[in-house]
Image 1: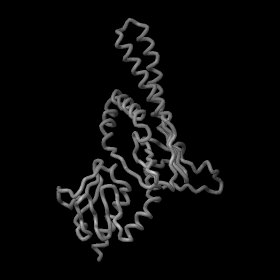
Image 2: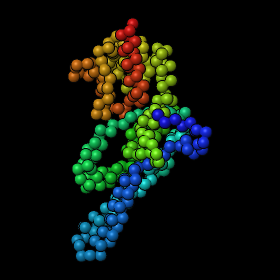
Image 3: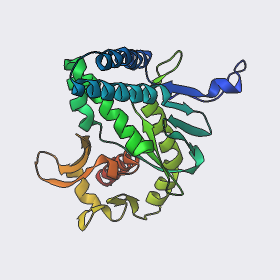
Image 4: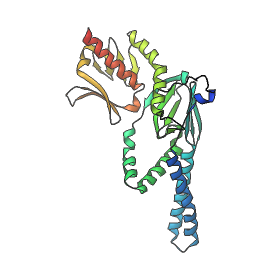
Length: 273
């Protein structure tokens, strides 16, 4: 993970990492919006059917909104905070206030990606849907990770952003690592003290094992089970069996990486003893 510590010749500004949509994305939506304007004018000034005029107007509005949304979104990260700039405003969260993080189900967006790769038309439809969703849902729309602070406020970190300038830092990996760094010590302290640690619908403890709802897997039973993420779902199942102990949407499980680590650690500790 990228360190935020400045070198001897670096200025404080150089410690801030900036992520935006790629240049190709921004050029693409700008060209669409620019092309839609003269097309709309031509349609309205010609003898074409009225519905074509309204259709071209709708396309102009959609492409205009899309261009604004794509150009506006930006994420700035430094050692103190994360700042997400959206079309609806700027949202900030200090790292020391982060209480949990949630991964989101990215598999549900796969259909749009595939369709967009097949034809430019579907890429435009994807852009329109994404733009409307951002304006409707705002801060949490299109997030790859959602951060939650100690006050219960949530911040969505948008996907499909790349780091400005040199380097190929992954925004999702960077944010996830920063969040884990903040929450892991407290969760591990509870776990080591024998207290069951809650992870949304799951709970795990050295004495009680893994629980979900009214179901319990005692520590000595964990050796036969695995926890994995597949198609946006966290599943716990016996090895070689189709029957699952639990299946929970990933966006309902806070601090999933820490839960998985404690699960594996508890399994190993039981095997060793």
